[in-house]
Image 1 (cartoon, one colour):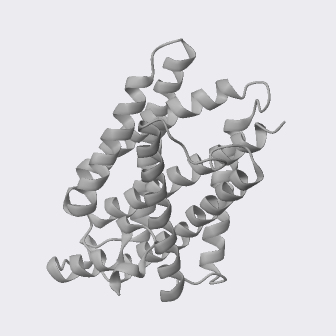
Image 2 (tube, helix red, strand yellow):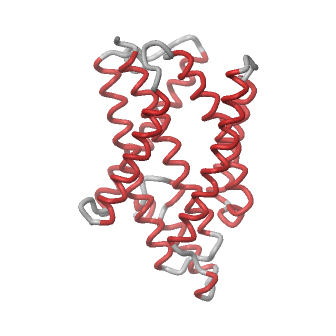
Image 3 (cartoon, one colour):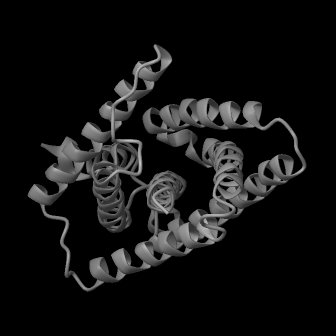
Length: 254
């Protein structure tokens, strides 16, 4: 099934194929891998800009709760719109990056403060591991050591959706004062769970690279570069947050 051809629902191959069929364009107006990566770099800089702002607000004693909720809810809404209206990606992907930066910056500042004594370099470590993992995944993909086969895509997609559903259930439970024991703690089980989620997030990068390459090869329209860059950003941010959560669990055991 085409639905299973990418672990990242944002970058499903069906979306690229449908776009090519519905919107054939000449080569100079077609999606390219380089163009997608350039746009990803631009979006990443926007994330860094608003992340710095929310970090600064936290450091100066400001109330960052509105920034966290604005970034989280606003980012989710924009992401859903882009997923179903990919033609709007050139306009909405930058908005998503700005909103996500508010959320990431505030959350990072909180972790930096909470683990200032036990893990003073938790943020720099998380950033380094995130980009180290992303580079490693790209090299493994480029060398075809890990191949995005249909079975591989189906497994990663299923695991990703399962994690999303589990997080949603956990969030609802917390609203009613309940929680899943051990998962969010620094126990051995909690750490192993985080390692599993980090691994799935990292493997989603393999699928993202594959789908961007296929989109460029099939001649998808130029605006799909923004769509592909947006999808890659979603995975990178997710990977960073999961690595940060893993490091916090490990540090809490000290």
